[in-house]
Image (cartoon, helix red, strand yellow):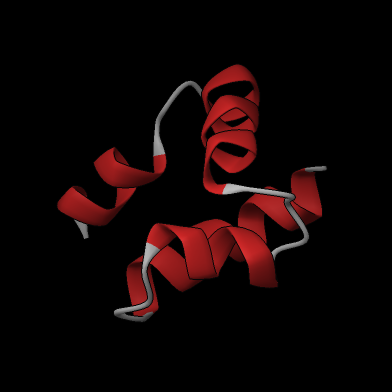
Amino acid sequence: MNLRLSFAEKLLVETEMTIAEVAYLSGFSSQSHLTSAMRRYKKVTPALIRSQA
């Protein structure tokens, strides 16, 4: 899980892909699955990571 979340975080920071595309490429079933996992394990949301980049 940590590897997938780290990869998703890298994609969010370094690319202009949508959060849904990042979720799919990182192995999550949906954007909401990525968001809930990231909120649970990293205490942030994908949108917050993207806005801070």
